[in-house]
Length: 311
Image (cartoon, rainbow, N blue to C red):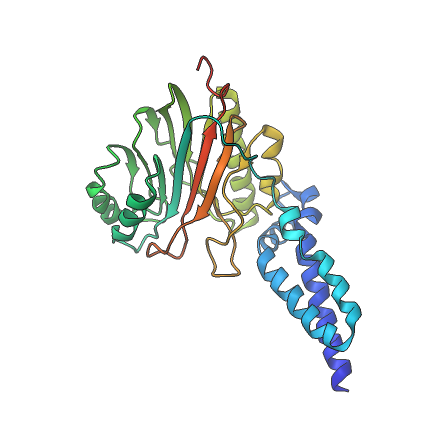
C-alpha cells in the first residue's frame, strides 16, 4: 500500500513538473492574448528552477522504486533550451559594463551599492524602486557625475547613473503613471541608446498585456534608431515568458543570465539587460545582497567594430 501511494505521488509530481518545464513553448501561441488562461500560463512559466527541482525530487524518489524513472532526467536541460536566446559572446571591440539593481523602496541605505560599484566599476548603472531618501544617498557617488534620477514614494522611482557623458535624456511616463528613462550616452566615439525601465508587474491579464506591448515597442524604437542600444531593469518578466519570444526577431538578445534575481534560490530572473545586435557578451554575473529582495546583475559587453554608425 505504501509503495503504491509513493508511486502515485511521484507520478503526479513528475507529471506536473514536466508540464511546467514545457510551458515556455506551450504558451507562446497565446502570447498576446488577454485571456486569463494565457496570463496564468505565463505566470507559471517563470518558475523553471522550481519545476526542475521538483523533477529531480520525483526522479530521486521514483528511481528508488524503479530504475526506469531515471529516463525522466532527459528533461533536465529544458530550462536552458526553452529560455530566450542569449547574446552571442565576443572578445573584440570597446568594453562597456552595465549594472542593474532593484534597490527596494523601503531600503534607504546605499552603502552596499556603493561598495559593489566601487569593486566592479561599471560605466552605467540602472536602479529601480528609487525613493527620495535613496536618491539623496546616491549623492555620494562621485564616480558617476552624469545621472538622470526620478525618485518616487512608490515602487517606480528610477535612475540612470553614468561615468560617460549623457548627450540627451527624457523621463516619459506611461498610461499607468510609470516612469522610464530614455537616454543617449557617449561611448567609443558614438552615441548609444540606454533605456531604464520597470514596467507594472503582471498582476492582471491586462497589466501583463501592457507590459509585453511596452517592452516590444521600446525594442522596436531602439531598432529604428539604428544605433547600439541597451535596455535594462526589473522587467517583471523572465526569459521563459512569451514576452521574450519576440525579442530575438527584432535582433535583441538577453545579455544577463538565468540565475534567480528574485524569489530566493529557486526564484526567477526578472532583472535583465537586453542588448541590440551591435553588441557581444564578454561576461555576466549576479551581484551581492544590496539590502533588497532582488539581486543585481552585471553585464560586460563588447561593441562590434561596425556597431557604431560612422565609427
